[in-house]
Image 1 (cartoon, one colour):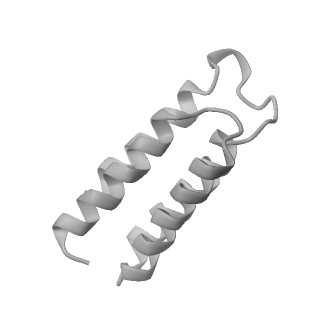
Image 2: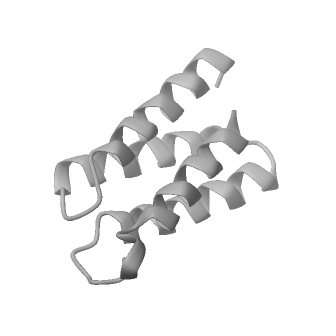
Length: 88
C-alpha cells in the first residue's frame, strides 16, 4: 500500500467515525472493510496492533450498548482518531 492509499483509507475511517456513535450497520461494515484492507497491507507488528485496537474501538463506537458513560463516547472517539494519526 502506498502513502496515498494509506491516507485514503485513514480518511475513510475518519469519515466513518464522524458518522457515529451509535448503531449504523452500513458505516460500521465500511469501517471494518477499511481496517481489514490496512491490516492486509501491514508488513510489521506495530501497525497490526494499532489496527486491532482501532477495530475494537469501532465495535464500541458503533454499539447500541450504554458503554459511553458521561462523556457520550468522547474518549472512544479520541482513541480512534489518535490511532489513525499514528498510522499516518
